[in-house]
Structure formats: C-alpha cells, structure tokens
Image (cartoon, rainbow, N blue to C red; front, side):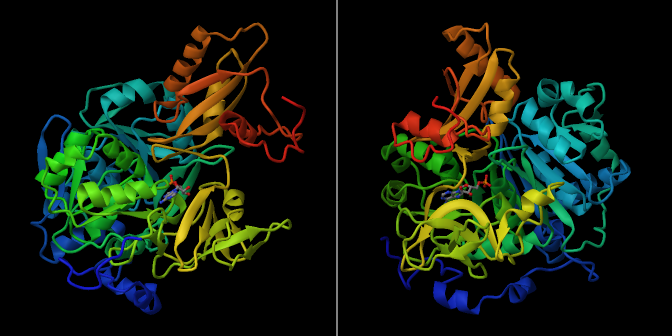
Length: 580
Ligand code: AMP
C-alpha cells in the first residue's frame, strides 16, 4: 500500500477525502460548473472547451503546445483555437454538411486534427477520429459503418490508404487534404480555411445530440461505433477535476493518440474545459524525448499508458535522473492492467507513484480510479468515481445477472447507467447495444473483483478481444483479413501475453488444398495482413496448423488455441467439434 498524506500537500487535491466526496456528489450539481451555450441554447462540447474561455477573458492562455517530430514548436492560444475552429465550422457549413453528419479524420497528432475535432463539434456534426496507423481495411470498415461524409487527412495517407477505397465509399463526399496537393477527388483544406470566416455562432445544441463516434472492437462481427453525445462533456470535466486533479495553470500531457477514445476525451476535451495547456507530441515513443518533454514543458499532470510505462522501465532508472521532473504532480495511466511493479517503479524512479484508472470506449470517461489523495494498492484500478455505481455481477443461465456482494469474488464488472458520458448506442446496431445490459446494469465485458475496502482489481477480459499496446483488437477483423489471402482456409487469432506490449497478436492458419506451409508463405501472409490492417492490428506471429479447433456450432475456440499456446489446461472442451 502506498499511503498518501492527509495534509501538507504542495497543491491541495480537488478531492481531499474520497468517501465524503462520494456521499455528497451529484451530477446535477456538477452541471453548474459548465457554462452552457449563451442564450440558453443548450450544451456544446466545443463551447465548453474553447469559446467559453475567450468569453470569460482567458483567450490569451495557451491551449495547445504542439511539438513537431523534428523539433518544431507551435503554441496555439484559446483565442486562436477559437478562430481556427470557427473557420473549420464555417467550412463545413459551406460544404453543405448538416448537423449529425459524420466527419472523419485520419491524421497524425498535428494541429489540424485538433482544429477539425473542435470545429466539427461547433458545427454539430459528429467527429470520428481514425488512428493514422490503420491500414485500408479498418479504415474502410469504419467509414462505411459511420456513413462518412467528410474525411480530413494528408496527401500521403490518402494516396497510401484511402484513394483505392473511394468506390467502396460512395457517401464520402469531401476529402480535405491538409497540405492540398491536388489529388483527384480531393480538396485543399488550407485554401478552404483561408476562404472561411473567423466568426461562427454555434447553433442550438441539445445535450443529447450525437457528438463523437468512437470505434471499438468486438470478438465477432464488424467494429462497433460507440455513440457519444454533447452531454459527455460533463463527465470529461468532472473526471478531469476528480481523477486527474486538474488545477488552473496545469500543463497537461496525455500521450494517447486522438484516434483512440483516451486521446479525444483527455487529449482534447477534458483539459480544455479546464482551460489548461495541453502538450501534444507528434512523434512516436522515445524514452529520452519523453523525459525531455516532461522537463522542458514543465508538465504537471501526465496521463499515459502501461505499455509506455513498461518501455520507460526498460530504458532504466538512470535515464530519468538526468532530467528535472520536478514540475510533475500527478502521473496517471489507463488502457490495460498496470503491474504493481510499475506503480512502485514510478515512486522510485520518477518520485511519484503511477495512478491506474479504468474505463473503456463505451463509458466515454474515467469510471474507476486511484485518486490523488487516496492510498494506492499497487495493482488495483482504484475505486469508482463519485457519481458512478460499480459492482461485480455474475451472469445467469437465463441471461439475467446477479450481484456478487462478497469481497474478492471474481465476476463481471458492471456499472449502473446514468453518468453523462455513457455511450448512447452502437451506430446501426441496436441489438448489439441491447445485449450490453441486464437487470439495469451495463456489463463491461471485463472480469474483476472488489476487495473489502472497495478497491477494484482487474482479472481479465470476459471475451477474446486482444489488448496490444493499449489498443483493443478484434480477432475477427484480423482473421477476416487473413482469409482474403488465396492460400488461407481458416484463421484463428489470439493475444499471447507479452511483458512490454501487453498482448502480442498471434495468428493460427490452416491452408487450402494445394498450398504447403513454409517460411516464404508465412512471411507473405504476415506482409499481406500488415498491408491490409496496418502495423498496429496485424499479427506479429503466425503459425500453420492442420485445422483449427471449433465448437459444434462452428465458432473458432480461441480460448483453446490460447490455452495450448500457453501450455495451460484446456478447460471445458465438451463443445469441441472434433479433436483438432
Ligand atoms: P478501449 O475501449 O479500447 O478503451 O478498451 C477498454 C478496455 O481496456 C477495458 O474494457 C479493459 O479491458 C482494458 N482496460 C482499460 N483500462 C484498464 C485498466 N486500468 N486495467 C485493466 N484493463 C484496462
């Protein structure tokens, strides 16, 4: 246990005592911290994140500090962000984009991504960020499901990943390229922005209007587009205060890419609603660079992920000593289990423990956390946010669930719906959404336990979804890409535990008649998957097998593939089709 001081803080935490805060918290009362659109026109995320600060005299503050891959540094104030996002909103209006229509981005962490996100929200269109390392297939699937109308991307990404998909995406009317470039069927973003006006008045926005669409992966079927509404900004704001302990003047660095929900909820919205300065680093992970950023930018609150923490641990304890990390006040992590050693390593090597917290695409914001003032039990995800009711439940045969009250019993982590950033549906998939609920609980798909002190501990996923480098990967999407190769008869994909990246994507493949396993074909299949899926999603290992284990109903038994891979007991194989 890491005990926290009860007084004498350098900066007093927003929530000095968890139990008291929990007892007195209400979402309705918290709502008073938001501004609302002028003239009682509702609630809009971009107004809370940007324009509100300009109206209240904070326009000169730094909103974004962008650090380019090659050492460039650009500062964007709230006033500039307001003007540039107004232009983007005007531009969408000029293109005839209507509120509710979907604007996708496929961009690295460059200023245009942030401008497109907030400008889209101002226009009341729906922002859907895609991770720029996705290959063409995940891009196509997501844009198709999301009925993409507009895509903002770069010429290079467009040529490499999107141009060939245009025929498959007839609803995609506008592709805006950040640096112009004259690709056929595209428009020049800068030229359009230059023609748009700085002034834009956000139209009436209902808190229940769709604002964001974030894709997440399931075990089977296509990716799911989780719908979030403008009301979510209340969760983003409150969790920023309570779980990340934001204070005025904080310099905040969220290392997640906005292509994933963390990078949007906390890399854009939450810190901006608090008027903070956000550090945005365009470059990929590099231990020395990261320590230098923490030092030079005087980062006070840092939100990162277990994979990154483990890579920093690998780089050694000596490296951070070369930097002055004295501005740091809180380090938090999310995305996958944070090993107890990592929490303690933070304490030892960085001078602060790492505060694990838990949430997922569907919850839109932090749900369970280790708070600044709360004692940490290394390895635990912490306790539910004030305003959030969490429980451990057991699924029953009849599809219902029952609550497990005894401490330390494993079960599924469930949440009582009602917090503002709760997803409102999976786009076009009512049935899949419905299946997430039973007896008034939202079932998270994660197995966990709660100890006698109310701390939650992550046990594993209830399904076969893979978590690699903090990214959820649906095995089905990977298997489908492998099956497109003419040599592949069957494919089964699992996550093999790997100390640094969490899980490594491994594929088992059986071949069609006439093809023989061999090193050349193995490489070809890996390369094929990489081209289709992109480096993040594609398998890193591939093994040929004569057949794959299936249930009698024809489902690949990934659980069995995994048990065999790890040399673990095979468990219940009564539904196995035939010995494989
Ligand atoms: P995503 O929807 O991509 O954000 O992934 C959400 C999933 O990541 C959760 O359902 C968990 O399986 C996992 N996850 C997120 N945070 C944690 C954490 N702190 N500890 C363990 N697993 C986590």
